[in-house]
Length: 584
Image (cartoon, rainbow, N blue to C red; front, side, top):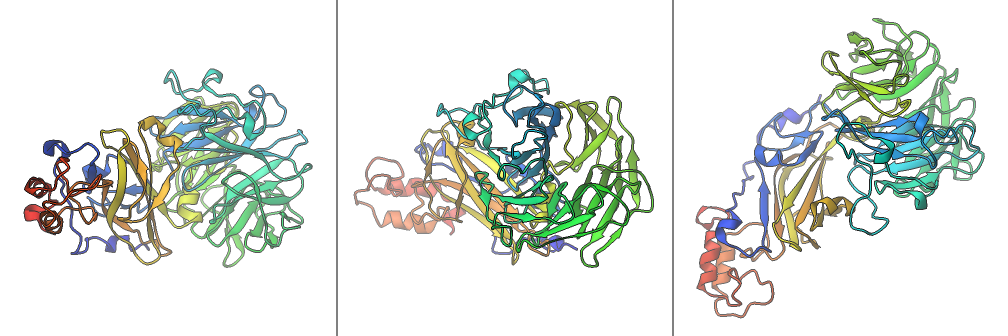
């Protein structure tokens, strides 16, 4: 049981800042400041798995029930591409090639496995059937980009006519199966995994340390991959330190738990595979209920869609035993577990939702125009998305009751049944986490940024992490990397726009940190002599004691910018005090 509700009142020492309008004060445009503290302030940013209403308003906390992301990614197997879907607009907003050559060339390619990291970036693995080459793995960036041609803009796929469908003309080329051939600047890299002879990529998942695990069906091997560049990482206990060699079973989808144990679907009689990513040791557990397909985790258990009429099975690692639901029987393909521990399982037609105890909550058939459901995902609103491979579209169901919310087109043969929404990574593989991202416009180009300060409550083992990036053009922010910063510490950055990403991370007891306010200050903020993010009597007295001195360039004591320190600077700074009567 979470203890988030016990953090219902803020400490007595927490006070809210109220800053006067800079425009009314006629300040130098290089001085900029903004405090976010009320619901209306937090609503200016993008919230992912965080909120400012429950259990309390005017503060940020993690969602009581974890959810997926606003964007989901869908692999289009028969055209060698992956779609990015906006689940709030119900529209495909971009499509990226995963293999060089014409769409659906039938030579190589054939993506089907997707994994999402904590930042929302997507990793897509090609199956590469019959190509004779190691599978190609690509990384698609969700809110950053690589300016390969140095033209200052992001050359990427987009919905140019805003009709919710991406055509070939709205995609960027991929001229070679290497980084040099990547025409879309949202695609960070493309790397072949393993040496020649390792074919048929059929498993992809992310460990708590951020490393990727790629499973090769034909060779029964798992490789470890660095997410930054796609290079192969060393495997402790692996063959030559390069890969884990499996015995008696083959990888067919995977998920990694908090302890770093990789659980693998095997499709056939292999049952449930197990790989300790810390030691490289592997084993497997035969499933008494028959062949498996998709795989997911939640409630401390490993769930597998069941091909033998049992809908799904659950494996308890504490007892090494399998169980199955008793309320409904059908052959299942895709499976997912939402933030409340409910199980979603597709039946090659529609989808059913079960409570953690296995009882049926609702079951829905295929929506009109949809056929052959495979994968299932949960989005940022806890709604359910089902991939329909035969009809080249996706169906959306309301999470609470399964009501039909529409069928929307995607690419050819959307053959993905892994977690393309990031719910597993953000809520299960790692401690629950979410982000609030906001962009502040200073109103002036080349604004020098100085400090970001915030007030928070952080339970033991939890964390609040803040990172920034800046640019003179808002559209260029995605070309810049986020840089971590410390609370109320100087950092160097400049640009009209400052984007701040705040990540809240729960502890092992699922206690959420709380963010009460966050203040952005430009460098050399006028009147803030001690640079603590507030202007008070200490600053005013420091200026008063400096009257008659000659200011240096950018001196915070020279509030009116006349290159003198006079009583006029004192008076102006009194007007700027953060609290009435310049209280500290």
